[in-house]
Image (cartoon, rainbow, N blue to C red; front, side, top):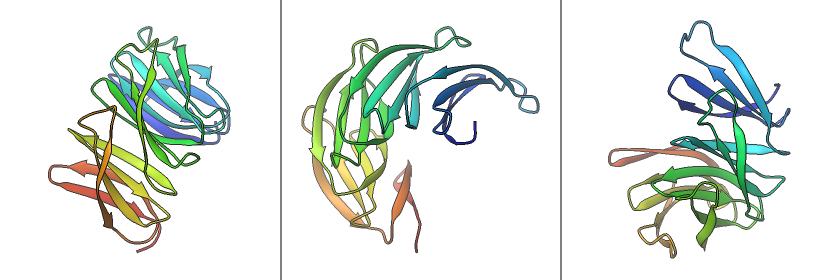
Length: 193
């Protein structure tokens, strides 16, 4: 498609979402110099992010306002197995253990979803997080969320998934869009410096 937006890797397969064609693409990458497109699956109107855990992919869709679960146990034939309406405009997703963490720009919150049973996912908790949450990463008991409107990095205690708690916000500068955590450091990408 013309609008590849995000990618997840599982073994020798890459899964790409495309927000122009609204598809999930399965690509065999066992030979990186000769990748092979194997299959595609229509997955909604505007997929925005993808994450994988075990035999499942989790895809946010900002137009359908939902989280989709796709079974990839038959790698070359992905199958949609569940959908959870989230409301708002789900933007990015991170997975840790039995939970998916979604930042939602429309409802301006963090949503915690129980994915312990991937065919029956359910909303477990939420927290108002700021006017424009953009990205999320989770490490242990903490979620790190960028917020474009307040130009900060929010730190949320998620040790109790039913009751996430904002414990810190750190000014990071203009328009933070992505965050990754490695060791004792969080790395933030911004539009402006």
